[in-house]
Structure formats: C-alpha cells, structure tokens
Length: 259
Image (tube, rainbow, N blue to C red):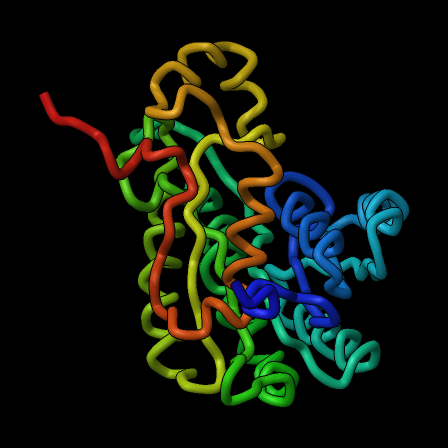
C-alpha cells in the first residue's frame, strides 16, 4: 500500500478549540503524524498550557481567539497568514453547549450556541479561503473538517435544543460548503459520539457504565479514534470524499433500533 496516501507530514493545520477535548485529541494525533499545527481557544491561559503539552509531539503554535466574534475570527485568520503562507486543513472544532428544559430554555442559549457552533465555522472558512486555496493541489485539495455531533443525527437524551439544532445545521452546511468550494477545497464533517471530554464528564461520572454498555462496541471513544479519522480526512487518500458527515460513535447512531 502507498503510505503517501495516508501521510499528513508537513501539512499546515488549524484546529479551533484545540486546547481540550476532541480538538486536543485531533491536534495531538496530527502532530504525531508529522503535521504542523496551530491551535486556537478563547482563553490565553488554556492556549499556553496546551501549547506546552502539545509541543512534545511536534511544531505547534497557539493563538487565543473568541470565534463567536467575527473580528476576533479575522484576527486569527490574519495571524495564521503571518505564520504560514498556506493552510492545508481547517478543523472547525470550537463549540459550546447549553442545557435547559423546553419551557425555560432561554434565547441566550440559542444565540451563544448557534453563533459559535454554526456561524463561526462558516465565517472562519470564508476568512481563510485564500490560504486554503494556496495550499490546494489537483491531486490533494485543501480540507475543511467540521466537527458535528451525533446529537445532530439522532434526538439526544439531554435537553440541549440549540446544540443539537446547531450540529444538525453544521452537517447540512458541510454539504452546502462542499458544493460551493469544490474542487479546490473538500469539506467533510465528523459527528462524534461519547468521548472522554469535559462536556461529557458529568454524564460519564453519573452513568459511565450504562453509556458504555449502550454502545454496540461496548466502549466510548478514545483519542486515537478521533485522531485517526481526522488524519485520514486530511490526507491524500480521502481526496475523492466531500460533503459527507461520518459518525464516530462505535455504531451508536447507525445501529439504533426502534421499539
């Protein structure tokens, strides 16, 4: 097999929300595979801490930015342009959630979540398109990888109405962006299921065994699972795939039964 099909060595990658959770897992995996990674997060302290840890795995730069603010998003895009003249992969991972029952779910819970989870990935891709176009090659286009959720595929057990709606919207936006940006930029989404993240920590603490038992594979996701799929979608071997959302959940959403 041609190893070059699965290589990301030397590629320049931006991972938003890369200081923890799925974003950190992806950043670490891409660094181990030889990519040069830029991570971003809202808090400067989190950026400094994550950069110090991730630097053990390769070349990494951290840039603080609140991507719910288009002006800060543009500053991030400008900073990336100063670091590198081209960007091979944008991983739109930064996100927020909000929980609340139907009758009291606030408007602020919609604005915060949709601005960051749905609008921000589109705006940042707009702002970074020139760098993505520069990195694109006929046999290996540039990539945008949107991090969705199985909550956008199936009705979640949590009352996170704006989160599930935003992720479903991001899955569809992935298709629309893929159509608009082909052939120079491929756009795909990953829809993670349960992973050991800060967002899921309370649920794992209260019912971790039940969550694992309900999965067809009998476990939750591991960092290597997220890293492997993101690496594949960043590598030349995935250059004939665009506009798709891939569940990364051990079959949880794809083997559900009714009744």
